[in-house]
Length: 117
View 1: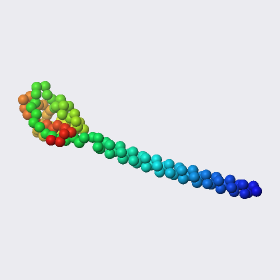
View 2: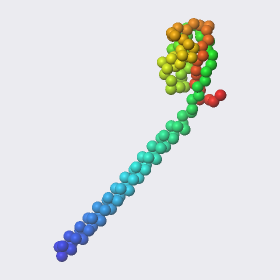
View 3: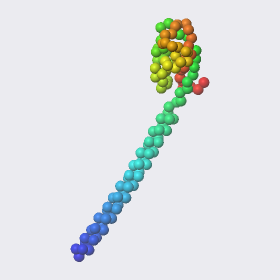
């Protein structure tokens, strides 16, 4: 009789282990699916929520007190461009060797906008 009880008990334990394993596997799969779905939503949300930024060029009259840094600070507001990168680009586009600029002169600068013109 003891062997029958032991066999029944072993069968129940094996069945319980099987159920626990399957439950754990289902939970793991659901968790992975959840992570994948939320990861995709985060990527698509950032792509859709950010407006595209367009780059335009214009002629700019240098005002008294202007420096390349002050111009860069003013015109890089809506961009990912650093002040140093912007200054390098302005110097290159205008064939400037130094950072010295003179009021009354004109330079070509870029500016950024989320509006398509």
